[in-house]
Length: 172
Image (cartoon, rainbow, N blue to C red):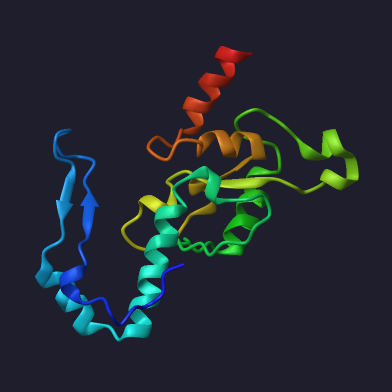
């Protein structure tokens, strides 16, 4: 792992960034020495070591061989808060049967599945610019775990309920 070496100075350090959207012949951009100097001046050595460790960790984490099953790794991401009462109200209004495929956990699993269902926000919270008030009647619907996963399977195209139902017709 990286450790600070007092023998290394700013002139010995070069940083380059891969820019995927650049032409294939030159996808790399060299970081100007001035910005590295600012970084060295701005951060104390201990903080710099932590920043570099995080950068190395982030880069290594892009490779599947980096992770082992069950290994705990720090994970930082935005989390979009949800009001539990909106979920409960949506279930009161719509019930616990999947709106897309009709799956009913209680019918399949008996008492163990009673009152179980996931809920889906018709407009993904991650697409909002700011927090909003949600109407559980029209903005949240019950879906089974399989349908919910299929709806969100591709980040660049979250399926609508209608699109998912269409896929179910094709496969059914």
